[in-house]
Length: 583
Image (tube, rainbow, N blue to C red):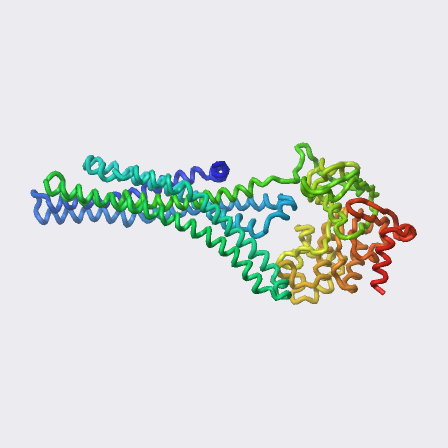
């Protein structure tokens, strides 16, 4: 139940609102408890009263009904409104706080976590499971107490009327308690299994919706339908198992709650026949049985919903308790002014402890303002090395230093603030082009956005779009070509204006015209900055101050284009192959 304790920390700031909601709710639920007493009074003290005339009985009846209408028509509605408003406000506010914390949390999780977890599963926990936890607040912290208090008040009133009949009314309570304990022990796990199966369906669906072009191009619709049905069947199986157990729970508990009124009617009827009980008291008791066992039935429903809610709480805090791979040291400091000298000292790295190292004892010293290009066969470790610079991952051995400072000694956010990245597949958000450029600096003016777009050779194509800078680019920028997306990505790096740049295959998937325009923007952006370029097309990096060849996780060659061509090693061979291909 550790997850419940964590959840209660989010509840704590609103505990007094919950207390007031419960107190108001007690008044709201207590008012209907007057109804059986009113019925008893009308039967025993007005209708069956021997010493009253018909006129006097009528007068007392109208007075009683007048007071009753005043209570039920004037007093109860605002109390009901206030209770509902407070309950929903508190519940929704707690969900707001949890989702806010979760979003902050998932932004700090490492790329290693995202490489192992489907996006749809994360979304399912943040949206579906968090929403399910609202039941814990509304039902578990409010309604259950109201139902319990209602039962206790009703039993207290019944005791004042007839102790023996009250004992008959509650004789089945222990059987009810045993059934709840037996059935709900298993229901929590069944609910967790169902929620996990639903998350898997949502994760698969999210992934396949994004991959519709691939499905269409390979005519895989029937195959993908089968894949989805397999996961949907798994969810169906878990849902049915939970439903069957749920149905058994309600069958047993509702049978118990239905038998109790029959026992009361039988015993009370016997007592009335033999003159030991008034008819009004019997009618009142029958009325109170409904007031006792309706809350009891609600408690059965509440127990079911609470079990489902707690299973969702478990899943929410399983995500929230996910550890960060990259964290700031307790004494980490802000990385402020950066010259741009980078030292990679005997760095080794493996993605998982049990896996082989992707980088092996790599050392590289880069001067401030120098442009370094990494080349080599795919899988050699080029992209891995540059992902260590902004601490997307931490080195397994060795150290990476900026201006002589180990990057693990500075605050991560301040480190990444000094690095600008343009990747092969840059993510654009489904908003305006201006907003996507402003990702480099959310507080930039319109003039600064336009200036950055011009520097990235993006202004002209943006102005040709229907709404210019206000044009919505669609999910992941689907309305833009590859070259246009890259230029928007470069524009936001211009706007960020960082001292260190990383280009990871930024032009490899583009046509020659787009590549030329982007290459021009890259060279302009890289001026007087420390720049790292991972390149597939070697012709785009011949201008680099140094070219570093990485093979099988090791640096095998280093030098300028001319030096490496003269060396006639791996770089020379790669260049010759590409040169022949181009011819």
